[in-house]
Image (cartoon, rainbow, N blue to C red; front, side, top):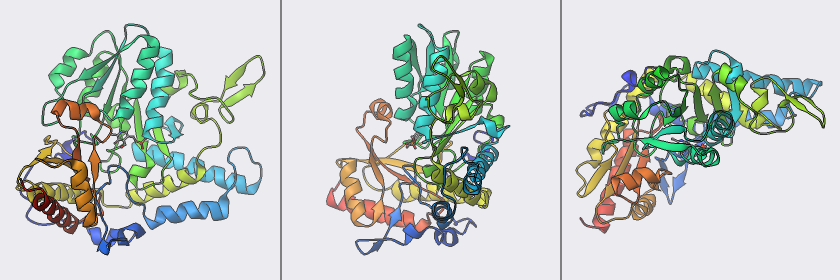
Length: 424
Ligand SMILES: Cc1ncc(COP(=O)(O)O)c(C=O)c1O
């Protein structure tokens, strides 16, 4: 993927809905037929977790009904089936992310565990007192706290690339901050609270000038953008299955083979060893070295179904549809009295955060819920973003391809109702 070109979202008045048939795909998602207090559910919390198509639900159920057995250790037919299915998803995930080899795909619990794995394992081996870890001002807590933990242990320091009030990184500042002390850069591909699509390629190029690895938190990018880790040139890329229409409790860490090879294990246990004696243990090659214990086999198989599902979608049409939803939502919300949009970067994914004068976001969320509209309110695990903007929280609507303009209309109606309850 180019880190922005296809998905550049110039604000413009959306006149017509594009060709993507969201109503047809909605039929794949049983939960979208739910009624909330007699009204249709309008699910706009996709950045927190996405809904699951029947294909994912069925694949997971089928695994338990027809293939359930522990993997890698069985010589019997059922275990061979399950092992092949599990390893098949590794190959699918490698293709999905554009990795050079399935061995560069480590299954984890999700983005949080993927980042903790790198911070802990790579950090333990590579960080020294006085070193610096460079993150950005818009990181999710899961791309801040793991680095703080290892920095504290090693006497290293967290350094922050600042952003402007629109939620765009200040690249000139990044250039000044990357230096001899910088040992790794860790940044979000797409911000969960602002929607900003960050210029990952440019940051990777910058880091490359200093020979520094870059970890990309792709939790919010994988559901919306075509990701190609080789094109981006990053060293690590972390994603969560549940945000990309797959099950909870499964995610992926992509890592360049040379880096993963050189890193010590993250956790010890079964399956990650070559041989164990009380005197000494030697470790399995990657990726097994990082997958201690019985993995989430059912979740992995569900993730494989989610990757297949996404692979069958016309991604250009999906991108245009989500772009349309974003523009349409901005258009519908921007003249609500006292409503301020938060996160107005030029390159944005389909996330609309806002505040309303005189109303706490939790009240906004509660009132719109009465209308069946599910949005997220709070700091979205980005407290430093809220501090920077001087606000306690926002209301966030985040769209997926199965959302429609009718969903946006329902949101706008509900928000206007909030304004009636709390006049500006
Ligand atoms: C940008 C970003 N990074 C990381 C995470 C953490 O993902 P998970 O909770 O699936 O590990 C999230 C979750 O909201 C996120 O939005």
